[in-house]
Amino acid sequence: MTPKELDHALEAHNDVIELKEKQEYERLRLLLMHQWNMQNRHVKHAYKKPTELFEFPWDEKKKKPQTLDQMKEQMRSIANAYKKRKK
Image (cartoon, rainbow, N blue to C red; front, top):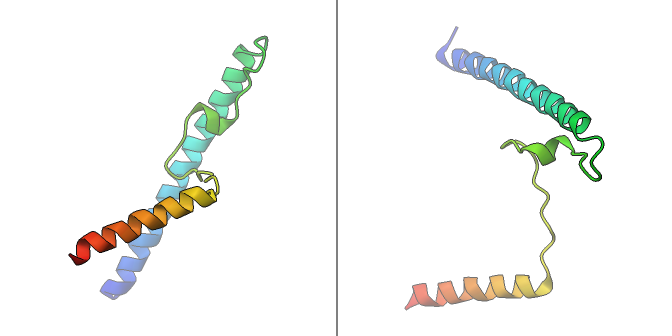
């Protein structure tokens, strides 16, 4: 086995381990969500989604679209930084 093949094999092995760990954490979060919802079932608006209990680094974050004013302000700050850099 060449060093490159060994590197690819180790990388694939690490990916499998990482995937298993993520699945375990997701399973734990799902169990905690069910526990939370069962304990608070009599409280109005107490039901939670799994991502509302706690977030993991691999969770996708929903980004709000920028408004026109935010885009303009960002472009101005970039232009100002470029002008300052040129001086």
